[in-house]
Length: 503
Ligand code: ADP
Figure (cartoon, helix red, strand yellow):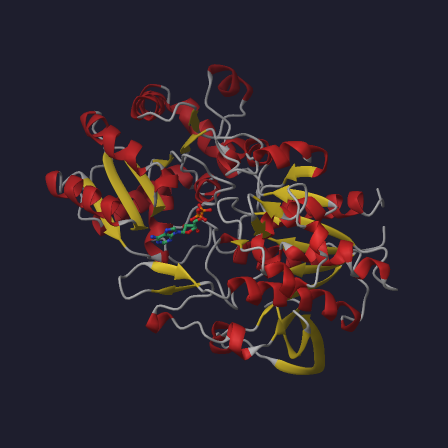
């Protein structure tokens, strides 16, 4: 089968500029697609972060005329490559829009720190991403190939499918190009005033509740959903959940209405970086064959790092998370006294909201010999926790995909997760039936309550202590799972073929 030609448009790409998981997908998916034999290019803005990232950058000589509200802005395009690949990354340069980020002064890609300490969106975000989305389509004739698919991501590129459908598709060359739009987190929709429509050059009649309008506002994410030929989210369960009022952030009706073109593909996991057999952060790297003799050494190291007693018999519950409401920290805090009564040690690595910092610090101060805490971002410690814990806690309220549970599977540290989003799709619960079938990889619960989390951990400890053969089988099955990017990229490729009628 001939390879596809794909242009991935994203507002951030890991290695160039990153604020979250979208950047990881935008860096890993194109590389994996190229490995499968597809011709792929990536396009993103040229931020200050890109200039400072140290990636080699060349000029292309391309200057795009980007129409913006009656004016045309001339825009230079630079080029780099995704590391270890031939995939070009086109960088759209427009200094007033994109070269303002500076972590030292609290300016990130989309937000700036206010004197009060709060973060606020840049007031011209709509202009910045109308401009970028338009530039994506102006770039197409310069790629050296006509894309079968333009793959846009999140609200920043939500207008790409609109421009394609309502403008460019009538022009020669673009007729056969289809659009795919991926929602990485529906909580961020890009909502702006109606006047932004003037900047886009789109006809005013598109501003109606069935198309671009959302309660009097222009909603970029909604625009992407309405106009894309296919819409995806980052797990099948999240694709179902966003069609409900609990998770849809107001767009549930729209998404339910387009369910026929909506699907979910779990993100891949970077197994080069998260590989227990060759992890330089571990005192005793291990394979599925050596896990039971070497993982205890990693556990002892974890206990040492957190100044906890080196007790091999105390089950260690590990957690790594942004400390925000989404992640279920409140459940862990409420269930913690019960965990300690069961003889557990608890280790938490995270950074985020002040209230969680304070409460976790309180817990640690009350039980300094039972609770380990690191508030901040620390890559090495994250690896140490994934390897050294006996169970990994991820009781999220919602989780579009989630990566930590996939790392813990690979590290033979059974995850204890709530059945939501990607957690529901990647962890198989240790029920009696699943154990008998040899399918179980972890422990799941449904109710968002401390009692449900507590009971699930208690069941896991019962298996660990009283039925070690069953627990060891869970560890082995977990380590054998494949949540690689190769797998996810093959699923995206199938989606692209479907949307292009090439199946
Ligand atoms: P989310 O994208 O919602 O933050 P994920 O589980 O998908 O959650 O991914 C989180 C990623 O960030 C993982 O790679 C995790 O190891 C890492 N991470 C989160 N907090 C920290 C921290 N404090 N220190 C180190 N790594 C962290």
